[in-house]
Structures are given as structure tokens and as C-alpha cells.
Amino acid sequence: MTPVPRFAQLEYVLGPAEEPAPGQTYWNNIRITCHNTGLDTLWITNAVLTGPNAANCYISTNVATNTPIAPTSSAHLVVWCGATNRGAFRSTLELRSNDPDQPVARVDFLMMLYNAFTQTDTDGDGIYDSTEAEMGTRADLTDTDGDGIPDAQEDVNRNGIVDPGETSPLLADTDGDGIPDGQEDANRDGAWSYGETDARAADSDGDGMKDGDEPFAGTDPLDGDSVLGFTSFLHSQTNGTSVVQWKSVSGKTYGVWRSSNLVAGFTQAVATNVAGVAPLNTVTDSAAAGPGPWLYQIRVK
Image 1 (cartoon, rainbow, N blue to C red):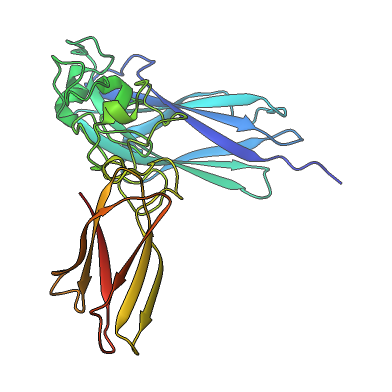
Image 2: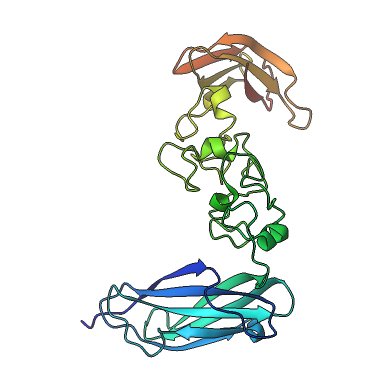
């Protein structure tokens, strides 16, 4: 069987690396690394720029096209973008290769154009003042939102945009779960590490409860099985009783409330000041006469 070359990974590294052309005050460039994880030689036969701002961009360095890329090896291109006005410029780089599974790879990117002659970094955080002005962060503070994580650690690629995988340098609690980013990202490295909740997702373990609500409920925000919720519900129309059971935590105090209409809300107290006895608590509602519907809610004090 003939080995199949594969275009497996395109790594983006932003940063000014070349001098601006005359007359083009605002500029930036992006380096695109093409890595061959296949078993045979990879050939990139053509590289073309398309998209809304393609006219402002060109490939200034190209050591990838028509160059054999051996297995486990890499080659790169640099796309340069310049204009007489500042702002965000979008374009797409189309890379054609002999990869049968992906003959055309399309790399969408956005570049913030900087002023080539006033590239200052007042607070020394690694983000140019011009980029901070575009983003809304403070050029005189390394941690604009005061969450304990430097702006440059939140905007990892320093492009002035909150990209997927990044937290916001303008929001102390990016995911709105009630826990500051600096507390969730305990080692302040800008990544979701073992033992940390995810500062970019309100519900790290996917159990339906926000990370910030779980400590109050006595549950673990990193364990999807540790959640405040009913485990069983039985209703008898014959004697008008309902039996509800839920996962409980010793030391917590619970209340069970009933409703027959979600719009009206849970206004009927079934049991209050129920001491938690792990792992399960059970309450019987003897006043649930009739066909219902009978809806129940657990509250933690």
C-alpha cells in the first residue's frame, strides 16, 4: 500500500517580523507552519490568498511551496498585510497539496494592523499599546480586569481579540460562573490544567451546574457525578403521596418545594431544614393528591 501524505496541522504564530513597505503605515504579518504527519513526502503545489482583504495581503516569505516536506518535517510561509489605515483585516490562505484527503487546506486568519512607527508597550506586558487601544485594555496596566492573570496571558497570541481557548482580559470572570478567572486558572498559565476548573466554560464537568454554584451545594465542579439532583421520584394517585430522593451531602441543609405549574413557580414547601445525610436523602410528600402534575425542586441553605 502506498503511504498517504497528510496535511495534519497548521500552526499560527502572529507577530511583526519584517519591515513595512514604503507608504504603508499600518502593518502586521502571520507565519503559518505546515507540518507533515504522514508517511510520504508532502508537496504544497500552490498558495493563494483570497477573502475580503486579500488585496492588502501578500506572501512575503515562502519556503513551503514546491518544496518536498518529508514525514515529521515542517515548512512555513509568511503572509504580510499592510494598508494606510489601521484596523482588522481578514483573508484566507488556500494551500493546495498532494494530500488526497485534503487537497485544498483553507486557513482563515484575521490580523490587527499596527502603526509601524509607534510600536510602544507602556506597561511592558508584550501587547502593543495600539492593540490594547483596539481591544479596550489599559496600556498602563498589565492586568486590566484585575483577575490575577496578565493581559498577555489571557490574549495569548496578542492579536487584540478573544479567540477560542482564551480568556478575556476585560472580564474578571470570562465564563460568568461566579469564580474569577485567576481563581479557576490557579497556576495563571492561561490553560486549563489538571485540578483546575475551566475559566472558559461555566460548567467544567458538564453536569448542568455552574462551577461557582457547586461549592455552595457541596458538590465537586470537576466531577460530573457529583451534582445536586433527584435520583428517583415515585407518585401514588391512590393515596396522594410522592416520594422524592436526591443526592445529598452531610452538613448541608435542604428544602423540598412543590409546584403544579412552572410558570407560577415553586411556592409550596414540602419539607424545610432537612439535614443532609450522604449519600441520599428521601422526603415523602403526603399532600400530593390528584393526578398532578407534581413538580419538585431542591434548595440548599
